[in-house]
Length: 292
Image: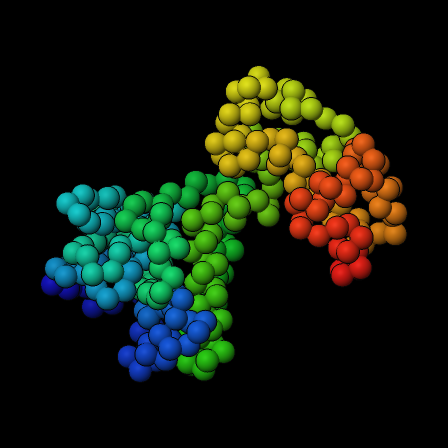
């Protein structure tokens, strides 16, 4: 069962032809993830969809304003401003606008061999809290780039670019903290705060206790929490950052290898080379030769 109001002022939508979807399934790039339907419904009064057998694609809905609901697997989820939901393909579902305060939604249908990459955000509410680092405009820009490129036609280049934008768009929802990191480190997040402290003290000798004290935790508690969040022990992460800095010195400076070792707090050039080789599987000398 499907019904929808006859039209919403300012609505826009594109549905790709079936022969184009066949091309997308055959193209080595687009077959990973591709858009089949995309649109925007502002103030979508009386908007309602019910699909007993679902649809062939995954359905993404982003509530820009107002309110609506999604029904899936016997549960009803209320979506309000800056919340999204992805309904998996071939699953019974329904959704609609609130009768009193109807939603404005960005929506698209997508499928492809790589859908499983985003399984962790499918079938659940995705909430995007408001802050000065939310990057809502950047996400909407990605959506507009997908829409406008499809609007320009179905050349292989357009379709491939849209697929890359779709991956970025979905990644911005799966990896919310990473997407926001470009704006500013969240000082309330102890992991990000500790990593910033590590980066600021790359050329100083700091200990686990120094880092833990900076974020207000005991060393043992901080170490456990940090490892849980990043899958690395704090000092192991710190050493990775030092090797990353070493790579930059080797590639973009004329510092001698022993000078880099000293600057980054290694005992000597041998100790530095051993640590570098373990992480990069190449010696500092070879790295400089290859990349400088």
